[in-house]
Image 1 (cartoon, one colour):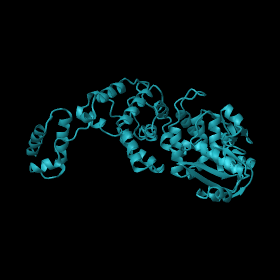
Image 2 (spheres, rainbow, N blue to C red):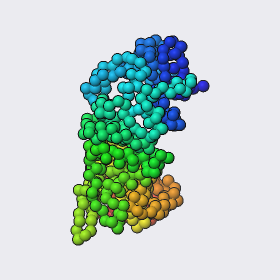
Image 3 (cartoon, one colour):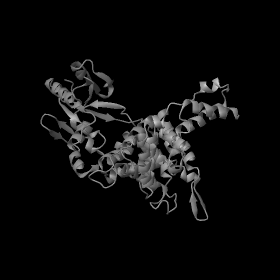
Image 4 (cartoon, one colour):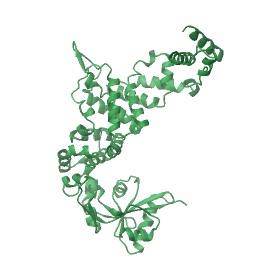
Length: 447
C-alpha cells in the first residue's frame, strides 16, 4: 500500500525519535492543518544533524544539506527534513551566509511569519508555538516574526509572500509588517523573475471569496500589492492604469485600474495564464488614450497591449508557450464584441483555437467588470457547444498537394487560395472534395 506524504512525515518523525532525536511537523503544513486545509506538502524539523538523518536514510537527497536540509523519499512521496537552525547574514537578500544548528525555539525565530513559525507533535496534536502564531491564525493576521524590516531584508520575496498569504487566506497584514514592506518595496526588483512569477501565480489564482472577507483573494492580493508599492515595481504597466479615465456610459465602474481588478476578480477558476492576461488585457489603454470632443477612445490598445504583455512575460520568465497564450489572449480580447455578426468561418476559426474557452472567459469577465451581463457569453458558448469538434475543426478538403496537381506554384497566393477554400468548407459552401476542388480551380485560374 503506497504511503501518503503525511504518513511518510509521521513515519520519519517516529524513526527520528526512536533514534533519540527531537522531531516535529513544522511550518506551512502546521498552519494548514490548524486551518482545516489539506497541506500541499509536509516538512519535519528535528534536532538531528544532516549526517544523523542520512545515517537513518542513506538514500535521501542532500540538495540542501549545507543548510541542514535533507529530503527523504519513499513510494513517490517526499518529506523535507530540516535540522533546527539559526540563520546569520543575508548578503544576497535570499540565502543565509551561515547557519548554526540550534534548538526548536531559535529555529522558530528565524522563520518569516508567525503563522508559519509553529510546530506540531503529530502523536499528541500538541502545538509548539514560540512566536504567537496560533493567536495570529485565529485573528487572521499576517505578522512578521521579530523585527519586520529584518525579516523582509533577509529575503525580499517575503514582501510578496505576505501579500500572497493575505490573498489566499483572507487575512490582514499587521501595520508594522505592512510598513516594512512599503519601505522596502523597491528592493523587490532584486528578486528573480522566476520567484516573483511563482508568488504572483498564486495571488492571481487565489480563491474567489473566503468566509472571512467579502471580496476575492485575487482582488485583495492586487489591492495589497498596489497599496504597499510592490505592484508599481513589479508591474508598473498595471499600476499606471490608475487614473486612466474611461467613458462613464460604457464603463460606469471607474478608471481602467478599477476595471482590471474587477475583471480578474470575476474570473472562474482561472489558470495563471488566463488571470495574467486578464490583468494585462487593457495595459495598452494608457498609451492609446485620446479624448476628442468629450469622447474617450483607445484605438488599437489591444495591439499595443500585446507587445507590452510580451515584455511582462519576459520579465517573469514565462515559457515560450505561456507567453504566446498570454499575448494572444490580450490581442484577441475584443474579438467577441460582435461575434453574432461574424462570418461563420471566422467564428469557427476562433473556436478552433486551443485557448478559445479561456478567451471566452476573459470576455465574460470583461463584460461583467464593465457593469454588463454574461448574456453574450452564454449565447456564444451555446453556439460552441452545439457544434461537434469535426464541425469546428474539419480536416481540409483541399491541400497544398491538390493545388500543385492543378498546376499552381507555391507562393503567397497559394496560401490565400487554401484559406478561402477552407472558409467555404467551414461555412458549408464546399461540402465535398469535388466542390472544394472546383472552387480552388476557379480561384487559381483567376490569378
